Image 1 (cartoon, one colour):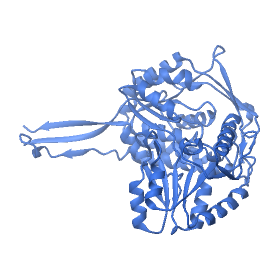
Image 2 (cartoon, helix red, strand yellow):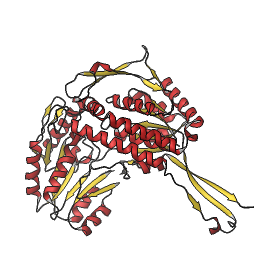
Image 3 (tube, helix red, strand yellow):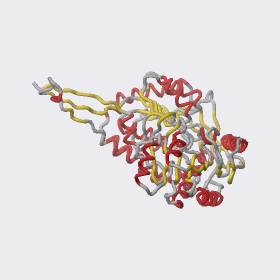
Image 4 (cartoon, helix red, strand yellow):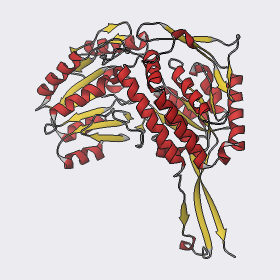
Length: 484
C-alpha cells in the first residue's frame, strides 16, 4: 500500500492557486481517530482570506470559467478522474487515517468519487435547454424562443467529515461542469483529502482561482462566506441547526441543504429475511453509523420480529472492530472521542427510559460497539433525533397503516427502506412515506451518485446527484427572436 509520512501534512488555504500560511494564523491539529496520532496541521484562514477567495473566484468566473467551452470543462473533469484513479490507493489510505474509515470503505469512497467526476464530465456536455413554441401564445407568430442553462457565478461549498472526498466532489464537480467557480470550506477534522483533490484539479488544467479552499472552523468562516454579495449559490452538508442558520444568513441566494435524518427501514413478513438482515447490518454500521441515512429506525413485522432480531444480533456481534488500515476490519472508530461519548450517553439515557440493550452499548475510547436496542419509544433521542452512531433500534409492528404512521412520525425525511416481495404493497408504502427517497428491498443508506438525493421536512432543501446538482447550480435564461 502506498502511504504518506504522517508529518508531511501541513496546509493552509489555497487562493488563486497559491497557498496561504502565515505565522499569525492559528494552526489546528488533525489527529487519527483510531490511535490519536498527529496526522498534520492546518493553518486557519481569516475573514480577509475568505473575502479574497470570493473576489478572485468572481473575477475568474467572469474572465474565464463562464466563457470556457463545455468540452474543455469536460476534459478537466475527465483528466482529474484519471489522475485520481492512478492515485486511488493513496487517497484510500488518507481517508482511513484522517476519517477512521476502514480501508475497504475508503476504497469504495474513492470509486464513487471517480464516478462523480465522470458523471460530471459527461454532464458538462449535456446541459440542454429547449425550444419554446412561441406561436402557442396569441401574438407569438414569427418568433423563436429558446431557453438555456447558464452558470450562476461563485458557489460556496461547505462539507462534512464523514465523506471528505466524495461529498466535496458532489459540490465541486457539478459546479465546474457548468462553468461556476467555487470557494470550498472542508471539515476541519478531515481537511487533507480535499487538498490532495485540489492538487489533482490543478494538475488537470483547472484555471487558478476557479477552485479555492479556505481552511478552519466553521464558526469563524461560514458567516463571511455565505453572506458575501458575490456568492450566488450556497451548498451545505451537515448538521441541521447549522444548515437552517446558513439558509437564514444566505437570504436571497440559491441554497442547497443536505441535513440529518433518522431513516426508517420497514421489514414486512413477506420480505426476504436474510436480505433484510444483511442490508440492515450494512446500513446501520457502515462507517460506524456516521451517515445521515444510516438504518437508525428498523420496524419489523411482529410475525418475523424474533427471527429477524436473532439473525441481526448474530451478525452484529460478529463485526470486527479495529485498525482501519487492517484489511479485515469491518468497523472503525468514530470521528472523535466526544462523538463516541455522545452515543454512549444516548444509549444510557434510552435504557434508563425503558429501552432494552440487545447487544453492544459500550465505548472504548473513540470506538463505540455496534449496538442494537429494542423496546424503544418515539420520544427517546435514539428515535426522534439523528443518532449518527452505530446504533440500530428495532421495533415490532402489526399493520401497514401503523408502520407508515410510525415512519412519518418525525420532522426529518431523507431516505427510507422497505422490504417486501409484494410490489403493490411496496409502491403503496413508498408513496406514503414522507422522505426524499425510498428504497425497495434495499437499505436506506444506499446512494448512487447519479440519482436525485435530498430530503424533505427538516432534512433539507434542494437535490444533489450530478444531473440534479447541475440544475441547482444553473439558472434558466430565455432568448426570444422575432423574425423580420
